[in-house]
Image 1: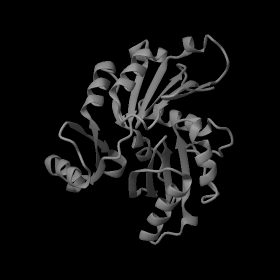
Image 2 (image 1 turned 60 degrees about the horizontal axis):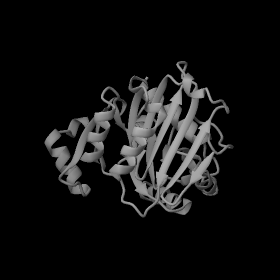
Image 3 (image 1 turned 30 degrees about the horizontal axis):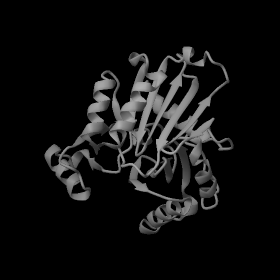
Image 4 (image 1 turned 180 degrees about the vertical axis):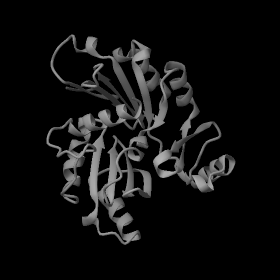
Length: 277
C-alpha cells in the first residue's frame, strides 16, 4: 500500500491484511536515512509482520527535524518503547580505521579532513570485531539528541553494521543497501575488507558506474563480484531491476532471488534485527 501527498510518500507492507496484526508485534527496529524513516515490526519469534516507510521530497532539507519528530511521535509501533530493539542511521560521513592505527583524537580529525563535518555534528565510533577495525560516522546533533530522548534503551548503530557481521566464506562479495537517495556499499574478499562507501545516486547507471569504477581501480573483473542488495522500501524495486542489467546475478542480502517488490526490504529488516538480537 502506498500514499502520496505534496510533501510525503508512504508505503506499508503487512504480512497479511489483518487489523490485529499490530497486537502481535513484540520487536521493533527503526531506520533513519536522508529524508526518510522505516519502522519494522516482528513477532516474538522474529517473524516479520509489518514495515512502514515514510519519506519526504527534496523541497525540504535533509535531516529535517520536524519531519522525524512528527513520525516518531505518531508511529503506532513506537507505542511501547521497550519493544524497540535497535535504531539504524545511514550517514555518508564515515571512516573505517584499522585497530592497529586507531587513535580516537586522530581518527576524528581524519574524518573531518575527509568529510565536511559541522561543528555540531555528533561523531560516534563502533567496533568492527571481525574486521579488526573502528567505524566512525558523523550525524547531525539534532538527530542524535532526538533519538536518545525517544529511544533511551535501544542501541543506535550505523545502517551498514550488518555488512560487517556474519560468515566470510565467499570471494569478492559486494553488499549494498539502497535507500531513497543513497547507496551504502561494502566489498569483502573472504575476511578481507576491501572497500566501503555511502554515495548518492539518481539512477541505476550511477550505481553501476561507481561499482565498475571500483573494479577498475582494484583490477577486479565485475563479473567476479557476487552482489547482494537490500533496499529500504518497495520504491527501490525498479532501481534493483535496472541494476540487474549490469549485474545479472544480483540477489537480496539474504542470498535469495528477488521477485516481489518487498523482497529486498524484508531481507534488510531481518538482517538488521539479527544485529541487535
